[in-house]
Length: 270
Image (cartoon, helix red, strand yellow):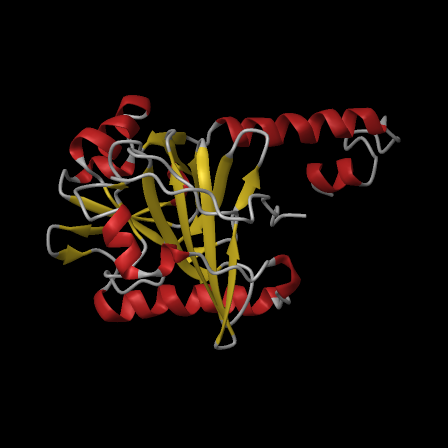
């Protein structure tokens, strides 16, 4: 009988006598804590540089969750999977290496990684909008479009982490900080310069198929009733160019926009 089996069955391996269940709990807690303590975690400040590729230009399909909105703190959180991130020298790379000089990203300065799992946090949002394409139908949700000059605009989106045949496109306008949290074990070196590190087309296809299979196994049904069906002007290209023209990094508002009649936010994660 192995030590693990003996413990799970409530016996002392050496004498075969019952042991206290509290000892089992303490033993398992120590093992779990030890494993967790070995995980390197990073919180990267992206407030001045948005280096996440949501467009799938690399060929790997990005996945995102429906956002969780903390109304008390005006915080926007979104889970990300299989997103490509440029290891910019002054932004991502240095922040990670300052925590862990032995990180796998230290193989090259000109590196793009694949974050297998990560958490995006946008603080102090003014408003947010969603467009969800599910089974070829568009569903919209708006918290009420409103912003002031100098507020910034973040775009995030991809295939739905939880639901088949769904894509999520999100827009958040904010005047706070942006953070990306990820763990070392979820970092996969992807591209150095022009050379990919995952096996070319076959490797990319394998990664995409594996993620598609994971989503299919979840087999969750999307609750359409959570969306308020308000389509704000933020999706209109001419509106975007008038109020939030293109620039390096985040788009920035050049005009104030008054709040809509719908000023109440509907929390998506009820």
